Amino acid sequence: MVAPARAPLRTDRLRTLNAPRLVTVELNADGAPAKVWRSRDNGGGQEETAAVVDAVLEMWRIDDEWWRKLISRRYFAVILESGTRVVLFEDLVTREWFIQTP
Amino acid sequence: MASGYIRVPLGLLSMSLSSTSSLAACVWIPLFPLRCEEARHAGLAAYPTAMLAPDTTRKLWQVSSLARHAGVKPGMTVSQAIGLCPTLRLIEPDPVHYDDCFARLLAALNEISPVIESRELGLAYVGCDGLEGIFGSPGTIVDAIRGMMERWNDGMSGAGSPFHRSIVPTFRVGFGLGKFTAWVAASRAKPGEAVIVPVGAEEKFLASQPISVLPLDTDTHRRLRQLGIRSLGALAALPEEAVTAQFGAMGRRLWRLAAGRIAEPVEGRIAPEPIVAALTFFTPVGERELLVHALDQLIGRALKHPRRIGWRVHAVRLRADLEGSSSWLAAILLKDPTADGGCIAAPLKTRLEQAPPTGAVERLVLEFTAFSPGTTELQLFARDAQAAARAGQQRALQCAAREIRMRVKRASLYHVIEVQPWSRLPERRYALIDFEP
Image 1 (cartoon, chains in turn purple, green):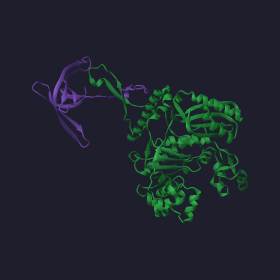
Image 2 (cartoon, chains in turn red, purple; image 1 turned 60 degrees about the vertical axis):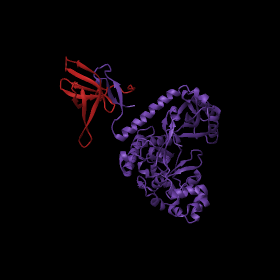
Image 3 (cartoon, helix red, strand yellow; image 1 turned 90 degrees about the horizontal axis):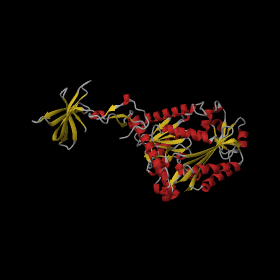
């Protein structure tokens, strides 16, 4: 990571890093993710790709910021069949699933 | 030799940074010093003018077209020229000013392409490989170069010796594969215009050009004309072996140039940030002994510069601002790079002896402009080699960032900065911010 040496920090120029991306998740009998569908824009339209979850490494839950806008998430650190390690979480408020890098 | 280098700190010299380009645009401003004078002295262009030679005030160096019409030619003595043209206006040369103007021009062209090669004052090559992706066709690349020249000219209007008259109408631009084709195209262009030679059409274009565009000495030129060879096409029509047998290795090169078989690439020049030592005299100095003494002092001071430690000096420039807004310049390339003050001073003292400044000196500036690594032992004493290397990396990063921004026309480099590294929400820990080195 490189510290900004010269330019003063301007929050209006900040870009999100590691923003959660919306996915569709198929759950197994235990309620853990078993398969993930992700759609991406290939220029000419939406392309959907699927990945099977190979292993669930750990799971945890975050409930925070109830005093302004509640954040309630159930996280799963998983390994996909390709060997990639990702984090999946379910937004327990909207019931949507997201994918993120750990 | 103009000082329009792409400057990098010494630490970067150990890295290989040569860059070349096959497609070339040749930017040519004939009689560049004279054009600079016409630009900064309003109304001068309306008179027949001649510039005195930098090394001797008795002979003419450059002559305007009006003076040429009156029979005045470069190399004539002043008395001969005045005899032919009594209204002739003589100009004392100001080489430091021309060098500065040209360096600024090269810096402006560097905004178009990172590969710039300066040949002589007023003649530079712009590497154009990859520029199609940014600007489009060769025509639009040439337009971009012309636009940049206009910006340079406008910038000069706000400089210390401002331009009152645009030089832009005297620019000629040639575009083609290899430096020779680009140069020939520029030499055929009308003032202010461009000649573009499409890739693959070099042979046809070159065939109709006169042999005078070749880099010939007068003897070879005469021999070729005696043989009835007046165009590049006529030369290329001869067997290569026959030309080589007649003119040797130089003949082979000439034949290949004429036939369009050689496309010498533009080579971007990398030069270190110079080490500068300057001395302003309380009163202008004309005595050579005093100048020599000042030179020794400046050399001693420059050699002690921390960035010089561990490096030997390869090229040195001595410039003097003279009374009456003229200048004097001596650029020396040392045969053997050295860190010895006496060896550096010797050729400069010879120059001061043989071609001294033509007026009293107000300010003397010494620049070490090129370096060679010292011995391994010397390198151990390079106190700030690491710092220079870091600065070099920063400079290289700046160049790369500028090039990327130019190519993709938007910011595409970012810093990763910590926002809330302790946050349990991964997306809140770090963010991106535009990278502006």
